[in-house]
Length: 197
Picture (tube, rainbow, N blue to C red):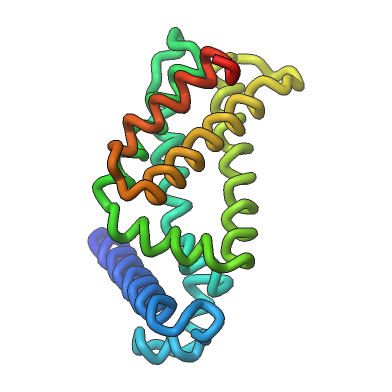
């Protein structure tokens, strides 16, 4: 009996991956705007209603990996020693995710191409990243054991996200000549020294 929830969750995860794969293939072939929910549902062999059970919008299919990425960063940040300065702890956490991105390079490139070419997907990605900022700031505040209304945790979280965005954009636009983790380290170090350095 205890195995049933695990099996059910695995089946849900597999169906979710199937919908994502169908959608990304269709977006590549027909464009984001040229692909309908009905098209995706037909390719994934589900009903449109089932699509909406898994994803609120078409945009969310492209950005389906965002929740997992955020969970990974938050988990890594929570595991960092509290003696480590916040910026160094953020850098270590983002480096883990940068390695994940690099290992899934082809899939990441496909998704980023769709984000870059479609304003509604890009806007949704920024909306989700604002949630990332809040989540990271909350962990930083907990690490500091400080419940004051301080700008610092949000500023650090926002700057860390900017490092990741800039590194990813550069990594993709330059054909992956420099490993992504190396670019992330460079961005973090540059901000730590000051932008004029």
